Image (tube, rainbow, N blue to C red):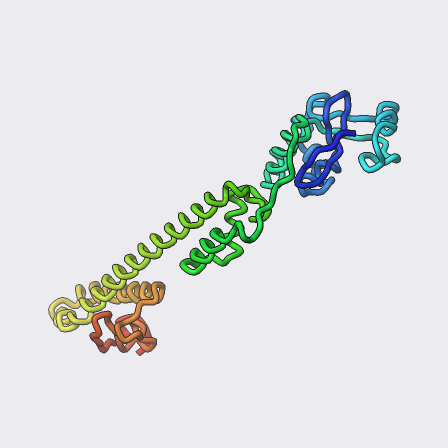
Length: 287
């Protein structure tokens, strides 16, 4: 029985009618799922699987003859029926599972198993080969909210490997470049966030200063036109509430390091060092 290397394991090729096939158990093992899942996908999609094209169903004397040519690990001697999946059937199941594992293994099955090309075991890199990559990962972790595991998970997904040591040696420079590009994106994002935060702080401070420094105008309006006063005062309180909400969301602080708006709503600490006494009522807060 011919064998091939698949995921660094030696796999015996099962043949039926002179073509390579796989059992349901083999397919489940290759795709990191369970036999029942493969069987249920078949039952739920019977119209998509054509016997003789996607699979062969062996029973009776045909199954008995097949057992005599195959070892007991491939098919149980007590089995009364046996499904053998062709290359097209294996492809259908990979599509239905739609997992990275299924697609990755199917590519290997396609190259090494069904077409019996010579596939060499993946050569693993050692820790010394990956020092530049580890340094790049450390820089990214230091400048972002990513942890080391998250970065290596992204690398594994990007290069379709199960472990970073499976990234081919010749692709390690590309992996380093990929991490450096992520670092650049993070740096740009952080810079934009700082710019946004500065703009938000300037807007919040301008709204508060305008509303509180024009208290005399609003009080005069109370006597000149009470209806307009209540209309505009409602807008003022609403804008102050929104300013308070933004100051909390962006954790805005004054030059003294204190919150822009104090917890008791009685003082505003501006970024230029100015302090202003306020009335909690204007934030719709209890006095």
